[in-house]
Image (cartoon, rainbow, N blue to C red; front, side):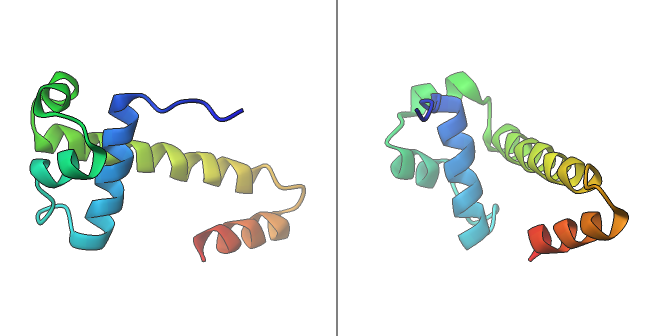
Length: 90
C-alpha cells in the first residue's frame, strides 16, 4: 500500500519537477500552488518563502543521492559497487 503524501512533501516534489523543467528561478510560488492545487495559506504554513522551499528540495535530493550511494557501497565487490553507481547515474 502506497503511503499518502503530506502537503509539505507534495509541495517539495512538485517544485522539484517544475524546477527541473523550467529552472528554479523561473518557477514561481504561484506556479507551485497551481500545479499542486494547494492554497497560499497552506504553502506559507509549510514554508516562509520560496527559498526555504528550494532548500527543502535540495535536502530531499541530497538524502536520495546519499541513499543511492549507500546502496552502491553495500555491493559485494568494488566492481559491482561501481557498476551500481554508474547504472544509477545513467
